[in-house]
Image 1 (cartoon, one colour):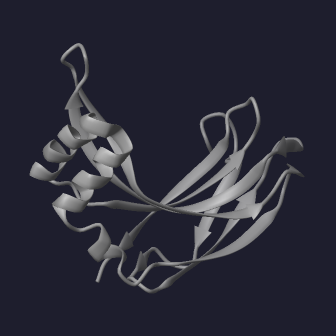
Image 2 (cartoon, rainbow, N blue to C red):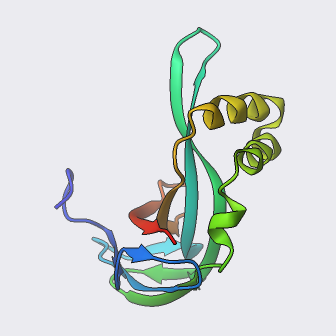
Length: 157
């Protein structure tokens, strides 16, 4: 049960540890209080790296930057209430090699954030944090807060 009532969306996976080339099998369950008109329902495999930097006032800021995003649609524009959606995501066989080198992470951060990203990349990869992998689902609701849920997973050789 969440802080303001029951969870509105759940992610259930067949397991939580995977290897490159495996298939993540799971389901997304919606349990909304009333019907909601939404643009789409998606599920994603995300890879995030923790970065630390100073803001304009000199305060240390920590944030996660997405370095990998594979998203698949589960449903389109629709009225949503209480549904269950099954999904499968195949993990790329070379996923860990693609996102293991410091130089690649620096390039991704620079591409996403420009020069600031290059500086972040140097900082982040100096004491590099591991990639945080997760399955994330999101119900895109126009002009309101989206309903979303994430489940951390482990991807290792």
